[in-house]
Length: 286
Ligand SMILES: [Fe+2]
Ligand SMILES: [Fe+2]
Image (spheres, helix red, strand yellow):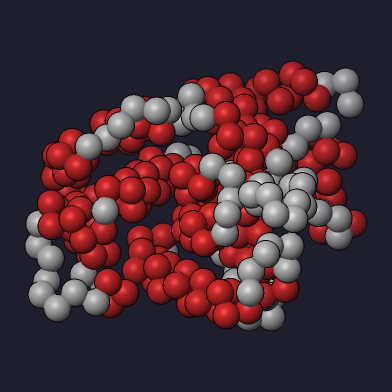
């Protein structure tokens, strides 16, 4: 596949065709590159964005946080939820909103794509915080953006994208393998290259690049972030939150968690928590 590299470059260059980051999104992306974002700064940014503010208030007042009185200010929501969780949620809402205005490539549902990334982000973050995982602070963003390469390929190379889809249907091989066969490269590596252009930290880029080829968890060592992503990806797909419509697996396919060192009790509390957190934000991704 001699044209693989030019095709890959064309797909990567499509990153510049995405809409500009909103002020809050560019500030939060900078914060991922290592700049701190304080409680006060985050509060001010959210207050200037009425859509984001309304959604943060809706989230904090949802059943899962079991507040007795309603929370009506952004500062109060920040105090209840914490800077980290609010920042992650705002990132997911902002990325989703930005992508929503992109002209949809043929055969593509941006709703599905946003839902897949947001659900994978929430589950990756939960897994990373409950396991001893590598770079747990990057798990949410890695989950959110792990499939950016899929979008870039669909936008830049719509005909090839259809060929990958047809090959996938006909052979039953994984989407990842079909990309390698048809394009000569795959979306995981492309996602990692996109995150490099966005200056995201190396451990996040590495995990995203390996999310279809994760190493097993070495006994007694931290769980590779790529394995966290791969597991979260498989579980949200089994729930039907996949990029392309596919029949959901038998509801809640717990077998996908087998590669992770999780006791059955820990697993059931983790999936319950995931479903509760997801239901607090899912309305945004319908
Ligand atoms: Fe993927
Ligand atoms: Fe995925």
